[in-house]
Image (cartoon, rainbow, N blue to C red; front, side):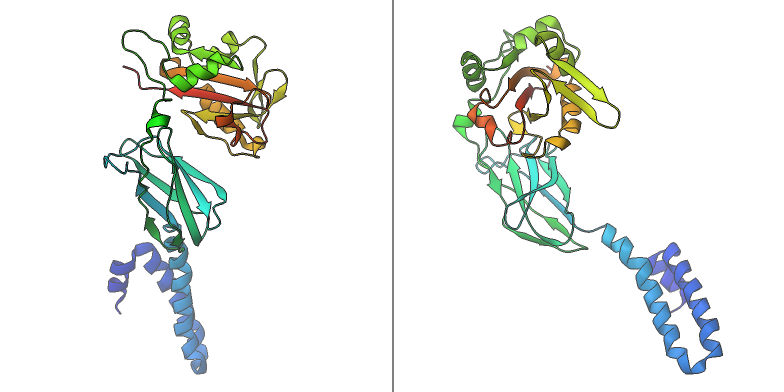
Length: 292
């Protein structure tokens, strides 16, 4: 095949590297005619060494959408998590965008399950999907809206900036933990969640150390599980990796905050937060909304 045709098919950088390898092979095999076959082998292996890594970089991708089962409407803000074939959670996840779309990169070839969670919807697991090194696999998830859970979602009354979510209010009435509702957030005009916590919760302190990120000290310094809009952003039994998620939470703008819950000690943590809080000393749950 002429070199120009090769270059047109596989790109200039790959063709040039192949030509260089073949020129070396030509000079080497000209001195040893009996090994002329090795020249072809060197060219082939040189070509493979150039192309395969580029191909592999494009693979192991899982794309899809989360769509509500009955309405066919996209579900934005859903937590997408990758599980192995035995339904064990991997440290790979993302959230759906405004049209319900998501993209994940699997850590390697294998069989995976994709899980979708969203407050107000039933959990949905995909069937196991085989992902090869060069694959881009499409997986759509179809959770169903749950009326009982939806009743717990915080909503903003246009006439009165108060939290009306029944589950939030019930936890607040129980008298365990610290709460900051929308009325107080609007009144105090907090810059961000960090300011809301440090000014509203007596004895709470945010500390930062070089290369370690943020740490929250309240009745002692320890790691808090983080929940955003009812979904955990930290992984159970992985308290050491909670720092980045805490930084993200603390930087949430005050205008986007809808409500905050803080629980210190296992005895304070409500049952709905306990599973993902395993291995943590408490829970920080914050709720957001789109500004009007």
